[in-house]
Image (cartoon, rainbow, N blue to C red):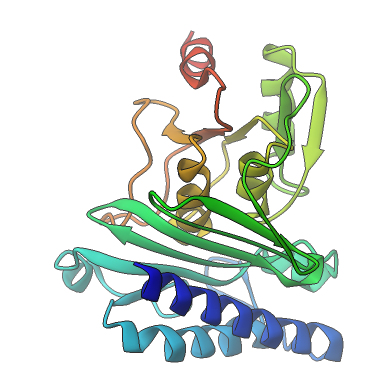
Amino acid sequence: MKALLDAALRAARRAGEIVMDVYRSGDLDVHQKLDRSLLTRADLESDRAIAELLRPTGVPIHSEEAQAPWEERRLWERVWIVDPLDATSEFVSRTGEFSVNIGLVVAGVPVLGVVAAPALRELYFATAGQGAYRERDGVTERLPCMAAEGPVLIRSRQNGVAEAERFAARHGIERLLIASSAVKFGRLAEGAATVYPRYEESKEWDVAAGHAILAEVGGAVLEMTSGEPLRYNKPDIRNPHFIAAAPGVDLRAYLRAESE
């Protein structure tokens, strides 16, 4: 597993460099996909670099920009699930809140994750049974590295704002933290936030890497309706609505309240 983590870290770091080169150049070459999401030169160049560095591992790759059909994926016990540029809209808006996500899934369960936020100079990574870590400005710390004082809800900057704030009001949560991309899972894993409800659409590559990091510190990502852990490499790559929580949070209590 160490060799796989090393490959994922190399790929995430190289992709981060490419993304930042495009970001600084201002030549983003923005297009709109059929689903109305954004695509930039950084998405494509990052994807190519990640594929080149992960291909020697022998594990097949399922990426947002190079999606494999279910007829192929159904045969894969192990698969890399990759988002070469998560929160492309934030990249285009130049907020700095975007990430590169690389997750390894085995039999539907995320077991390794790397989330790199190059503009923030942060990188989170974890392997099942080996701990979760954050690199920030060249310093590496084991997670969790802080403790939130009371409940703190984390939400996206642009998506699902009203739903998240209604959730906070229903549960009496007064403190809100805003972050875009899979960095939200890093904030949960490090202890800066305690709960993240997700009502808007997301895809497997948005969540798999962050889920692996959060699970390694004892957190969880559960489907809102079934209460089961989110799974990956499914026929439908869309995730159901879910709630993610930091370790020590009574996530079942939130789910019970949401179902009433």
